[in-house]
Length: 372
Image (cartoon, rainbow, N blue to C red; front, side, top):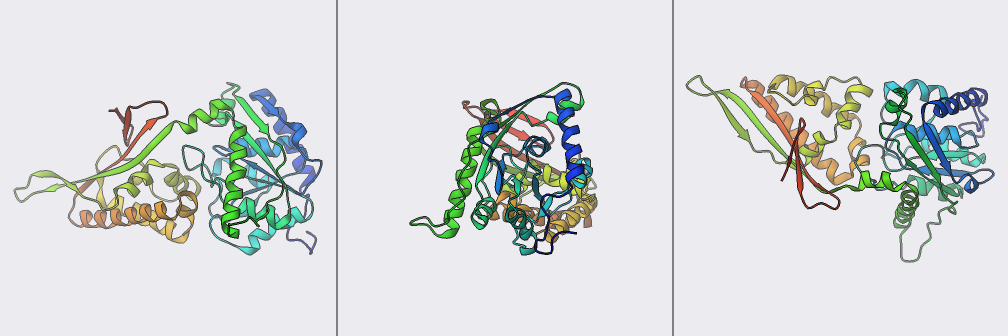
């Protein structure tokens, strides 16, 4: 039983985690080429918050396996863990926090860990939702200030696709660079409100993390520039003569719809993590039965309504509102097309260029790429 003084006991699952760490390190030694730099920067004890960049599950595993303390990882509490990794997180145990909302009962858990001189691991970018370094969220700065806890920035490299490569015995190179300790966040900054000071501190923390990411890794998330989105929609139905004709439908939120579909992890989460029937929105290669599309959109919108911070936490309020409005508009169009027996073709479009290049690239799902 946890101490009644605290909502969670620290440390916990001591024996189980000891053997998980032992086995995990052995497997990484056999299946990967792992390099950890900066051991000397780790403090002797907590309270301390470890902060890392995040593109895959491997950063979480390495942070848990290689630091010398029994660490408590903060993870998403608003959606279930990917079923492929849920068994690991269930065994280890993590602290669920509903991202984007303020739940005092949830926040008491990491606070109580730090009160017991514990160690928290957090990845404050908002998850693996964008193709480049993301803006930090202020939760890490608030936790540091609230508990007078110093911060250790950690930069990971080689993580994207590393698990699959390791399981294929390709021994990927993994890097974990541990930075110097940063003092606890002080929200009293001249000329700034407390909110502004916490935002400044969060961005400063992530700047230290970014400086620790290997240069080869940074090239991959810096390469996308001038990214913008569009969306084409076509319906196909019978005219007055009984012939099939195509008609382009103008949409009011092409940018939001384009981004929604060009971030496939959104629908992957609904399908894989939540087991929701949205497959009609994931396979855009052919014309679709409008009723199937309408049904899938109904499911997606219900999920977004039930999880109001799902998009806003990960993409910001403005983009989230545009994405949601676009999906809502698509729902109305699909229902109208279904009532008329029409077929629909969705064509999300993404424009961007790569760093150091002037040539613009256009991607039209599913998989058509043009270099202009």
